[in-house]
Every structure is written in C-alpha cells, then in structure tokens.
Image (cartoon, rainbow, N blue to C red; front, side, top):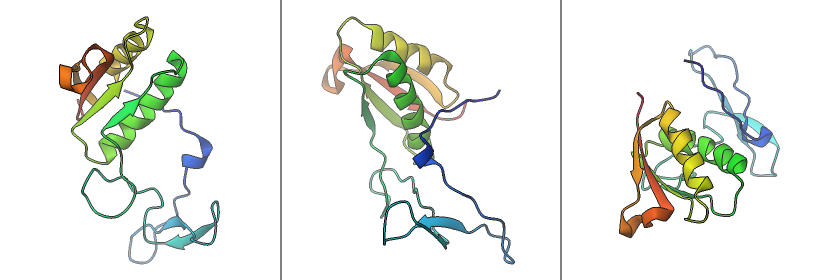
Length: 139
C-alpha cells in the first residue's frame, strides 16, 4: 500500500537526470558552506549502518523521552526509514515508563509500519519496560 512519510525540508535532496552513462548524478553539499549544493556522484545524505565505512551513521536506537506522541511518531518514522536504508536489522526505541502514552504510540506505529517485521519489549539489559525493540525488514 501507499506510505506517507513526514520529513523536514532540509532532509530533502534534488535528484538529477540520468547522464550519458545512464547513471544519475546526485547533488552534494559543498564543503564551503551549509545549504550550498554542487554536482557530484556521491549521495549528500549517506545512510550507513555501524562500521560500514565513512559517512553518516544511523544509530541503532532512538530516544523519545520527553516528546509528545505526535513528535515521537514523526521522529520514529524517519528513524525507521533511515535505519532500514542503512541496513540495520533492529532498532531500540527508548520511550521510558511514565504514563505509558509514548509506549502505546510506539507500539501502534510499529504494528502498522511496513518496514517493521516484528517488535518486542526491551530485555532488562536493553532498557526493560522503558524500551521497545523493532526488527526491520520488508513485509
């Protein structure tokens, strides 16, 4: 089915047209300054799991404590997408215990997210009742 994802405007990038070799050059951030773009062959927003070389890494956990449920959903959706693209197998979501509202919102989102194959409460060493672990993969 269709998937809707909310992302901040600064996370978007322009994708160029295919060149003579049939590859699509991606614009890259220039080292001279933030927000300036130059043409190049590398992805300006590389997604790499831990230990996969140079570039931006995607954490295998996301902290949502202190966020509203709406903020937490937006943050978690983006993090799950980034983690999947980076090739991470699992993501630990730290929501805390509190009233349980964040935990319920997290479980509801994970239960319907197309990139989450399963989820479970965190083990004691993973944060216990204050954490949830999501297993990623296409369903």
